[in-house]
Amino acid sequence: MAVPTKPVPTPTPDSRPFFDGAREGRLMFQRCGRCGANWFIARTHCAECAASSPEWVRASGRATLVSWAFVHQKYHPAFLAETPYPIATVELAEGPRFISSLIAWQGHTLRAGLPLEVVFEDAGEWKIPKFRPL
Image 1: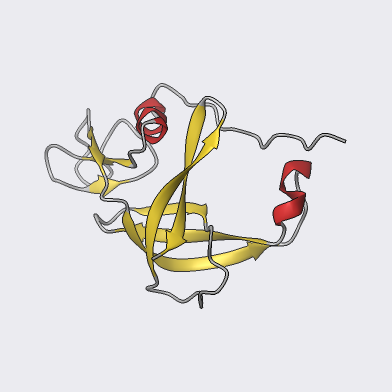
Image 2: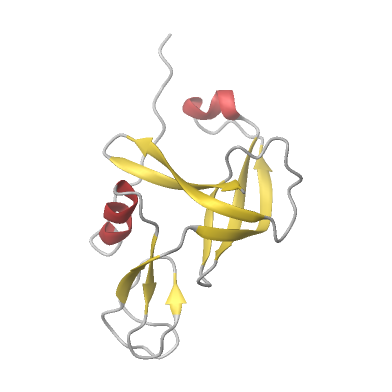
């Protein structure tokens, strides 16, 4: 029996620069050109000063673990072999927080502040950023 493929996000016009960057091995976030606020989750206006047309900036790929939870529920057949697996909130070195999967975490004690780095998992046409302990 063939293993089903994992579902893959469909980029929107606003999130397309994020996915294009990931496909090229670059983790991208947005920065306001007026006030300098940084954020992740694509949007057209800055939440701090309401300026429009934010710029996309490349992240260093370094982050720290903020919190995590293990997913035990088998929601999709493509994830059966990985269950349970950790989902984490990470804080990029540049400030924005990002929700992602943790990989290669076995053998590490998960704790807030654990240093992480981004890696990219092939997902068909796209690559998906995930984080692993340093």
